[in-house]
Image (tube, rainbow, N blue to C red; front, side):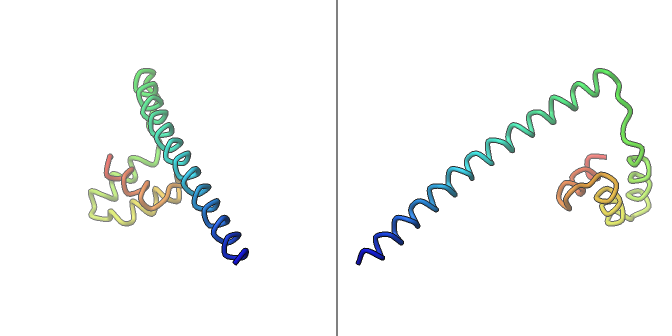
Length: 91
């Protein structure tokens, strides 16, 4: 009987930790998105040149090689698959 109480307590603690970390992770993701937006605005204001790979990615997309463009973006920029797809789509 005591074993079930201990196991139940541990399960509650684990779920509490998961919920706490999940909330903090979501908060950090929101802050990162906000910082990226701010950084993009600053880059536009000071005329920072775009990444040299962008022209190659545009050419690949125009040539119907969107998948290759995403692969190149992943390799060159170290992005996840989703991030690379979004990056290429914004070009």
